[in-house]
Length: 162
Ligand SMILES: [Zn+2]
Image 1 (tube, protein in one colour):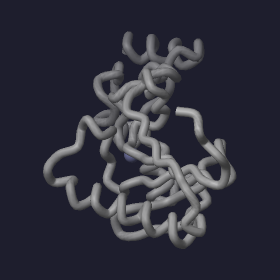
Image 2 (cartoon, protein in one colour):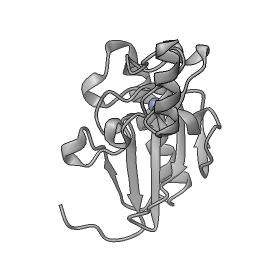
Image 3 (cartoon, protein in one colour):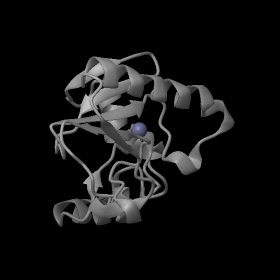
């Protein structure tokens, strides 16, 4: 009973949110009880601890978030970047949740090959075989913002800076 009153207080104070029993196994230890949990800090997803359920790209792949899909196979999806840095700016994403190139495993080798074949395909079919740049940011310090491996395909303008 004492915990119940404390939990009600926390919810009213906006310091916690209701959690039902199904959520009690989710996340990683931020559950205060079956009834409440403290909100997850907004910046928590900025590191490599991002889980599949937090992941924007996994949600896009599962059609739980909208995106402009330009190509898709069983293993790879290509979407338009919502903040394009070039006239053509696609994101090539393996459907498997892989945090970045540092977490690749031997079992991922065929997926990596399929990503590169997709690069070739979109270069030929979607950018008219123009010159293109392929970028993969691996880690917060170099600008990775979604911690699900992806490659930026940039084309349609001169990019002589590097
Ligand atoms: Zn993901």
